[in-house]
Length: 190
Length: 171
Length: 257
Image (cartoon, rainbow over all chains, first blue to last red; front, side, top):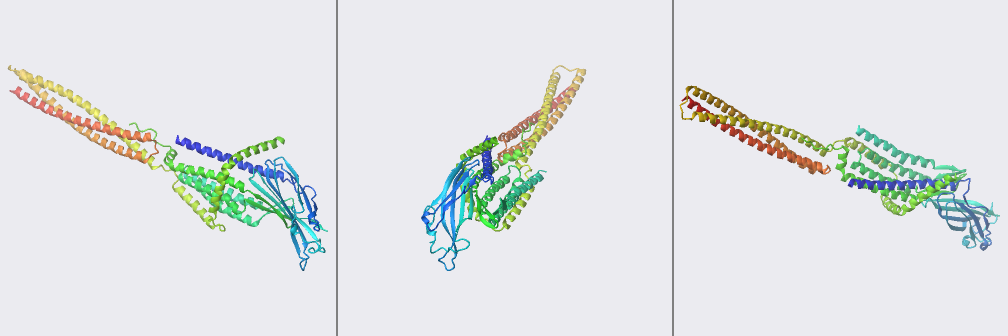
């Protein structure tokens, strides 16, 4: 009778472990499948930006600066994408006229993080990341255009670069992926 | 015959475990070390790669040797139970040591025309924690087996030799 | 294609349900595991594979040696003892049968001797009466009586021989019964040791063996008693035969007169 109970206990635990391990393996496989469908280059499920980025980066009027980054996230996977975060930074490279040799300087003039939340499986989210004036723009980092910017700098007086970070949890929050694109040139003045 | 069979079984499992714990991870990480997707080179950072390979080799050796001892031992013997338990614990360390090698956050660099464009990182820490929970239960099961083998040692040995005490001489 | 997608989604939902249910139970265990592993891993060498290779070689070598030398196919000592004990019990059983047969044969011999004793006794009584009659005995009758007396003497001698034989047999039986008794005692001791040493053997069987040993011991005692009895009976017959021999001699002398 003792041996029967011990056998029963053993089989119950083994059964539990088998079910659990199979579930974890399935989640991994399904997560991989989801990743493939979401990041399929032919389908463009994650579009950042989704269309043109509209912006006013005229540093002579910092309070009037704005940026609008449209994005579209479609979740064609089998699990929800959760805790989606989007981080957008704009760096500006210019010749610092306040230095003897107009040293090339890079400052971050815009930084914003947006917590998008969840996109359920089969769903999609279309929105914009918007920054205006002091909402996102780091006014303190913007140089004085009349005294601190070398407007004769070649090839361009002001060059703008974008750093984008997109992260999300998937497969029941068991995996977190992060995509970081750094210093992508997006424009210049003039 | 039984002796040789046990040793052969041990050697087979040794090879299996060397393959699954060392060879396959080595090949996998070497393969994914550098990939190209849509003309973008995705490269695994070198220090991460070296640390992964080190821990995979170190614990792979320990797991494989324990597997040999376990599978060449007689069924339900105490030494089999002991080494099976040790193997599971070392297996936990093997899985978790990936963290120290950065494998719970695997980072791929994106390179276009020799320019580092950014990275893609996959963090599997939560998944690994869940696997650790499963291992905990496996350890509990192996520990239970071990105590069962110790307590019921004579009964097990008796069954193993198909006891000849069935019926006393009726002279 | 739609069916395939639906099927995949169904599987995903089932797996999600299982994991969502089990996650709160398993995840804290995982966190605890993580904490002790992080502590333990500090002590593992992190730059050199040498130690790990050495441990690998040691474990594989030790495993090969241990599992070749102690492959687990040798019978456990308590089972060997039990088998030996069973053989002893069988031997004792055979001895019991032998001694039993001997005792039976001896008992039959005693019965036969008893019958002979009764016959000779009767003869002696009859002859005594005839000889002690007060009438004068004719010569012919006297010759007959002498013959009868001689016959009686021979019968008495036969009874004496038989009783001596019986005495020898009873002695032999006594020795056999003693040997059997010693064996049974030995078995009883062995059964006790076996019962103590091997708790995992079915208790029933171990006790059965002990009972059998006790049974054999009792049988040996009984046989010893029988042998003693038979020896006494044989001595009785011997005395009786002596008496009858005396009587026959007396009667022979009387008839000569």
